[in-house]
Length: 183
Image 1 (cartoon, rainbow, N blue to C red):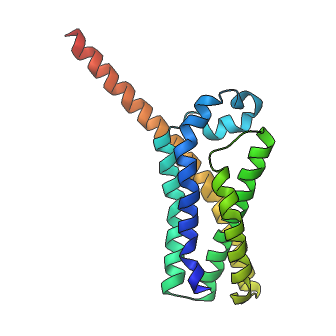
Image 2 (image 1 turned 180 degrees about the vertical axis):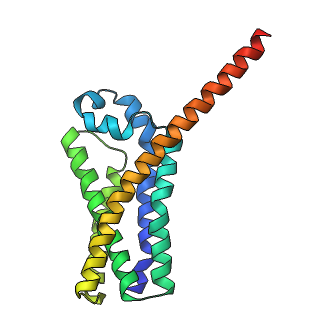
Image 3 (image 1 turned 90 degrees about the vertical axis):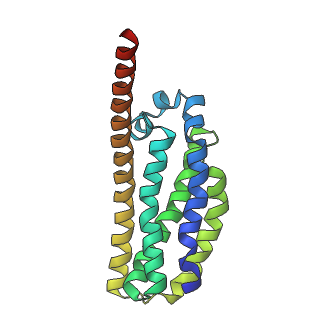
């Protein structure tokens, strides 16, 4: 299992780079998505590529941190937490593929989802026999999955917070520039 631990953050960042690169383009070329899918508006409206990238960075921290800890300090708890994060990422790929099918359009991240889904599924299959699947391990896996779901919501909230701060700072700069031009 140790040979797979450091693949998790690599798979995550490979996938999310496509998402970051295509984020702004996707919503600018598909403005009607917010009318057809109102839940998307709540999650993504008002975000910029920079604030979305900041949210991805926040999401990356547990992927990288837990992988490093499990690699250098192997134990059943860290392995279970790592496995729960891997399961979350694998499910994340499925969600992106289903979203693309649902809206009948390319979604930035679907190509890497198709590439990463078989790889992460294989890692799940190869890693499962190395887990000591007792009650504590199962609870740690469940808690880890739930923590990753909460972390996605936290990351989106962080991105919206940054967007508001960035927009208010830009407005202040524009006001100062306008005032200086008037003088």
